[in-house]
View 1 (cartoon, rainbow, N blue to C red):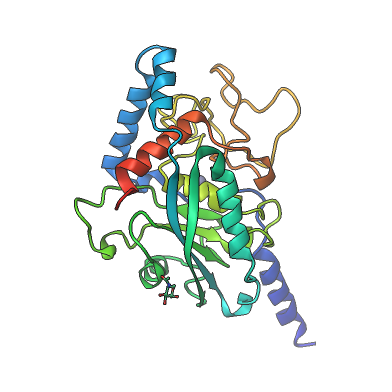
View 2 (cartoon, helix red, strand yellow):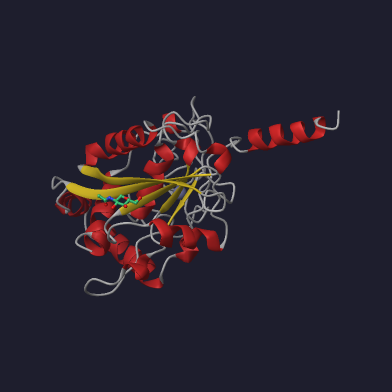
Length: 295
Ligand SMILES: *[C@@H]1O[C@H](CO)[C@@H](O)[C@H](O)[C@H]1NC(C)=O
Ligand SMILES: [Zn+2]
């Protein structure tokens, strides 16, 4: 009988690890550099200038047809308890999900390497463990997308990512950008155990941040600058699940447009996401060119 409370406790722990009622992302605009925020503002001002035709031309101008190829490295970091949960086919399926989501925008990911680590502290990545993990594992250059798939990601979030920042001229040492990359709850990979978020779209969303996008509900307000993108309707709340029915979700009814519940930069379920807007794609392409390409 003495074993029973222990058993119950460990069962409760196992269940808690995969219980996410809704998507939550820890990407923090407050942590973005001043320089990045001022770039956002400049790009936004540029896009709003002139007639609708001039704006359309501006968006189209961003070499929308030039393919972008992004090198990527995936890191799988598991606790010793969960080291067998992430099977060897999952990273390839995750790569497929990433490429399928970005293919319409001519952005492709080339997987250079996969690393496998068993480390109880890094699999959580709380506090200083986050940077220690990245310092230990990051590969490639500033233009290399490093995705850390952690079985017990800290902060009750499914993912979090760094936004681009200026790393200075030339080729700075990797230590300058050691922190760069995205953490993703490993159970969100295709075949994972996070209900509603198991098609790899968390990594797709986080990669959007890595390429310079904010949430479509950024600022949680119907006023202000929001996501600094002109063609995503103003939205003041994140979306849970996948609202259907009519009228649709509209958190800013006095402003044009309904909420972007199918947009990858909202918090909807994986199956609900359909893509990015023309403005978001132009933004990612601009940011790639300004911050990461060739770096
Ligand atoms: C892949 O990562 C391992 C470390 O886990 C490293 O030893 C190896 O050199 C890397 N391979 C390439 C092609 O970068
Ligand atoms: Zn996010």
